[in-house]
Length: 160
Image (cartoon, rainbow, N blue to C red; front, side, top):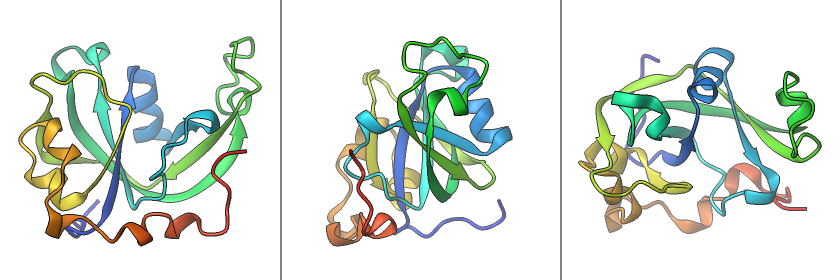
């Protein structure tokens, strides 16, 4: 990715529990969000990835981001055909299709916070944050108009 996003670009920070899921985002260009757990601010310009303890020395930090290209509905079985007997194999997910992943110039660590689900923020706040906790309270002037958060999914139901 050659171009740095604008400070006002909407970012959804998502949790990545397994290295395989980050590899899917980086190499296959997609990330999955269970329809049953869709966050209120799914419509964003970028996804950023919070890596959990499974990532060893890179754990508990946001290091990578990618532009969102489109959303598709799929079942878990369609997304992960190598897990046909998974208990949620027939559940529906948003397949968030992504552009190329890029690394943040400086990772955003989590000194104390370990449990993250989704964080809606801006790219400017992501760029300025020194800790993941900083992403929860974006500066007033950096927060986009709340009316715009759903613009990318206008007319579509997020939950069924």
